Length: 417
Image 1 (cartoon, helix red, strand yellow):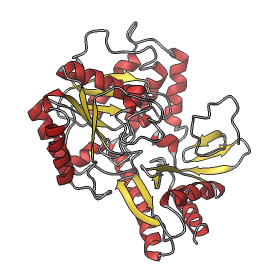
Image 2 (cartoon, one colour):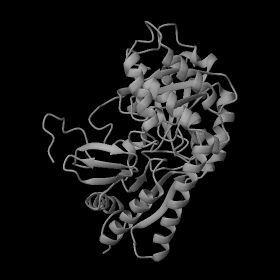
Image 3 (cartoon, helix red, strand yellow):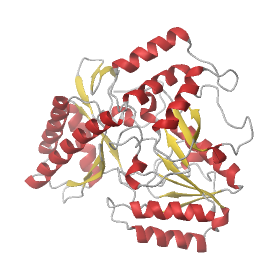
Image 4 (cartoon, helix red, strand yellow):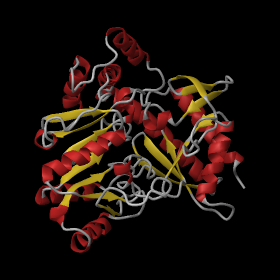
């Protein structure tokens, strides 16, 4: 399907046009039904059109659609900020600003960290992803396709290996790389922030090593560096907890949120310690649409719905079902391209390995197309584009989840050499 008037620089995974959706199911303009394991790339943890969210959004539209908060505050923004102060599981009082997107949240976090420390350097990680704006591009841990042809990017930014059980890089290796960085590349007293995803999204659903996370926390405290956790994709229940950093037993100084925060409406946030968030001069933070009233109504409802009880039930069901399915497929030895399961909780990836017939990336490309033909929508990830992302809504009905995994198995069967 061709899309006239759309820049060819937008990469389209599935050349179909969706008309409507309900929880984990969508229908295209020809009436074809698909099971959606993409979820807006992690935006729809509560599924398409959650009825309680829809009701709240409709009611808000009738009252107030927008007020630029910097000019005239509105109650929705204040309610979301208050709700986040209890929803985000940290031991300190939370201060926040709302933004339109995750990339905008990351950009503002850089501003805040610079203002707080008086420094400019940033440390990020290989295979990380933090946005597509000019400043966030340099944070990303791979060149293609994001940094091609763009020349020098805002910095300075330095990258380290991302330690995880999912990629074979140890905490000790990354600690050594960090020590080398401070000795060879940049002095620690020139580093404003270290930004890292507790579970990488674009990088292939890899969980950060807990020992390394603890090392970062101690080091940042000693050196006066702001520790930023990017939970734009892993937050709001995707890992079975409110936020993935809970699995690491480490708190950040600043936390980035977005994607599923408002169930499909554009809203994100950067939140953290007040003494850091208040570092930018008055008027230095804000935005015309940031914290839009309708998006805030959706976000407040999302937070109300995401109780620990609900998240535990949803996450446990998704996790156990996906793990069991992968275990059975792997044990059958029918699919030579099928590799390890990555991630944690309901945030899972499946590695597609190279075989004598094709590379892992080629296997995944074929799998995406064939799965779509079987009525299942899937999403790639990883530096080599060989890791399948599984992002079904947390609220997916058990029978629909089973049907989707059955279709995935049928796709694997169709691709057997």
